[in-house]
Amino acid sequence: MSETPRPDTIDRRELSAEQQAAVEELLFRLADDEFVHAERLTEWQIYAPTLESDLAIANIAQDEFGHARLWYDLLKQLGYTEPECIWERDPTEWTHSLLVERPFDAGDWGDAVLRGYLYDVAERIRLEAVADTSYAPLADRVGKALEEEAYHREHATNWLERLTADDDGQARMQDALDDLFPAALSLFDPGPREDDIVAFGFRTESLAAMRTEWLETIGPSLEALGLAVPDPDEVAQSNGRGRYGTHTDAWHDLYDEVTATYREVDFETPVELRATEE
Image (tube, one colour):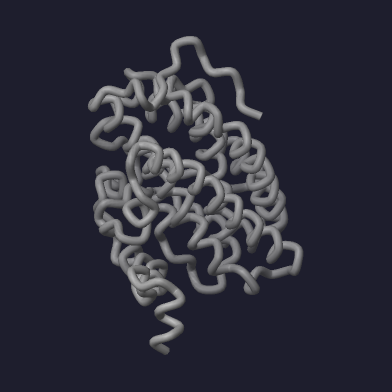
């Protein structure tokens, strides 16, 4: 059920050009992260270490695709089509973080678990920061996503406890943390309209504040498992890559895979005519 909007909320028909540009950036950030994260998670289906975890990772990926759909649908209300949002969009226009586009280390379940934990904690903070958004259509959709993200964090936390149960496991997970941490920080890189997003009330927290909360959340939790969180001031910075459309070669390879079937299908010719021609 939709929540009662704030008295000062803005409807899509009331957006100025400047406000629409800001809300579009926010929605693309949300949607692109979820979509690309989900695509990577599907690579673990049938390869997870137990049947239970195989089903769990499939369900998590499905949830993330669903969340991406929530945000892409809001962009469609602003005049975009689905092909413009996903299938025909130039890969350099995507604004997801570097964390979600990274390939998994081959056969490293710990990579998948830790990446999920770092991402899901950030996602909880991000969704809470838009729960009281001034953009009414967005406010109506946050609750469902927040509920499902709680399950994702629980799954990741349970596996982290198992994977760090002994010294060897802690060493492996520490290597994974050291490797993933710089890319995870890119979740909080600003885009070109970050100031407007906050000024218009589309998000009630700045990315800097959200980053601080994320560090204060993951730090004690991971340290309790015997892991040392790197000092964010001493790791390589992304310098805005990802949010400004500059991505790694791994993303371009993934984009080609994701859009391959779409490009092979002739959407201009009706199905019945294609059947006749064949």
